[in-house]
Image (cartoon, rainbow, N blue to C red; front, side, top):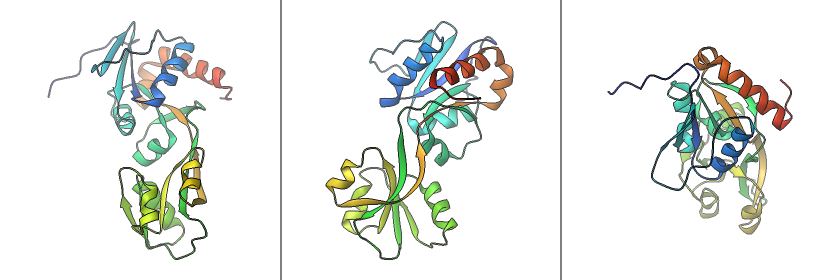
Length: 213
């Protein structure tokens, strides 16, 4: 395995997700004082700025890179972070990409839960176990709502933003597991080793989003 290149003590490596969160994340971090601009569309996965490296990752990989110390910090949705089970420091709710993780069923459905479809099996099992529901959890990759419409599952656990997709498919939220939004996450060792860069960044982001320490 090729060893990771040595970095200056004040150099930050950030893990940011591809897609809709990336643009808002770059804008917020730039507003907090980091010399970042939105990368041009290309096949590049690593982007270099003065004193900062940005790794462009799949959403689900951001907590892994931060937890294992390849990245010092990152931005990821609370849903993905919770599902990952990774031990990282979560100092700031950035308050964008807001949605909620909900138990979804066909309107009026009351049959016992035998099978639940979801992209979040860890969260789903914890939710069901806490309620003493011995349902099977089936991990799915996309179009989760279809599982409840086809009889694959009596319910699904998935993200809801506006609820328009549910309404269009005769589905409803029967329970909200938790509210989700983008979070700043930090590697615990990096918080000490790169304190001079990370602490001011955390405080500035808190100021921008209006969050108390």
